[in-house]
Amino acid sequence: MANTPSLGPAGPSLPGMTLERHILDRQRSNPEATGDFTRLFHQISLAAKIIGSRVSRAGLSGVLGTTGKINVQGEVVAKLDDFANNTLVSVVQYGGQVCVMGSEEVEEPIPIPEGFPCGKYVLQFDPLDGSGNIDINASIGTIFSIHKRVTPSGGPGTLEDLLQPGRDIVAAGYVIYGSSNMLVYSTGDGVHGFTYDPGVGEFFLSHENIRVPERGNTYSINEGNYHKWAPGVQEWVNWIKSPQDGRAAYGHRYIGAMVADLHRTLLRGGIFVYPADKKNVNGKLRLLYEASPMAFIVEAAGGAAHTGTERVLDVVPTELHQRTPLYIGSRADVEDALRIAHD
Image (cartoon, rainbow, N blue to C red; front, top):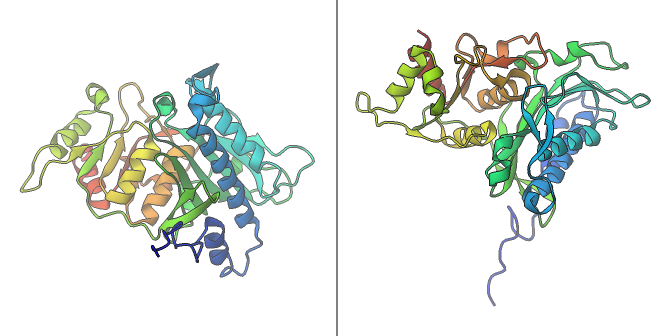
């Protein structure tokens, strides 16, 4: 009789470690745990499943193209952007775990509806990073971070709860919608990746304790902006793609969605850079929705994240949609970039 094929990450007799069980196991070691964090993560993963389902059939469900609206960033809103944002808000807002939310797509803080409980957590997210890739079926993703509120408990959250530095994040993660859908998260003590099995409807642990290599061999940057960069950044790009002192030239890899480029960097090493330029003098990436959450994850995996002047996680935000330059990835590669581009 032929061997029974393996079903899922751990074979047919053992279902494997689910995302929910993974979080529960870690919460049990915390004497102050109330279950709110686990429930919030369950809501986020549910939203990710809904968004992933719609992404996988975007061409068949009428969500390609734009809504015709312009968001707070001055960008045209894609239909799938709008769907992802509304899904996250509607799944999370009634659960009683968060007191306020912030979204890259929404100008003001997102309050909890009147009459529903306000919890101790603050959720911020980029509902669909890389939305320019939607209509060409390239990888996109959702990025999120969780803080504890700093205002008194019980009442609604405020802008003060949202404007917290990345070093105070209690958990951050992202979901990448690609050839398979993966959710990667960290609470600061390791980075773990879960692959979605659509036949079971669960995220299963597939990448335990991810570590960024000390140095990689690829760099990610939009070289179409070369003429806009400061001379130091241009010098670094010229340096990294040329053989140096016995080191081979780095290869250029750029998907055009930060979440996808950084997912590759997290697993294989290298560096992702989005510097300031003549058009975006303060940088282009959003501190609260993109840079801080990804910096938290990359640092927890042994990498580094810097603005060019300071560690990303040390930046204290002053605006909800504040932008920042970003150098992130393998520690040695980030150090090289800072040494050449900013010395």
